[in-house]
Image (cartoon, rainbow, N blue to C red):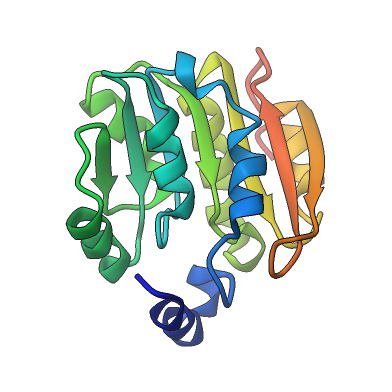
Length: 192
């Protein structure tokens, strides 16, 4: 999917797409560098969009590993299925808040790593919290949640849910992006 079609989707639904342009190669490299994908069996990506990050994940996964790509935009789902046939890719046309159910149905007890490009700051508060909690539940004990946003707004909530959060910044992306690397805490996240 080209930049024009991506921009067209942004104009139609900016809360869902979140950016006027796909992620840059610099942002993708930064996100991929935060994970040891060669050791992963199960990886999840929320909001793969035009698949810039998806392709990088698939290149680094070991044989037999699975990448679950959660996408709510029907046209993006069709494009992923048509343009990126890969034996390790499972495209899921559903919301990220149902990640635990989808992993369990596929026989996985948890994910080694979850990547996200979805715009948390523009979604309703209850949905944002539901996705963060579901992500915490979906991760294996040593799992990581690696995401980017265009502001540091989400940092406090990430620390509440995950505990340990490392923050990086990628100025070469348009717009510049904050990258968060969250390590799963042992205790359950707070209920608030």
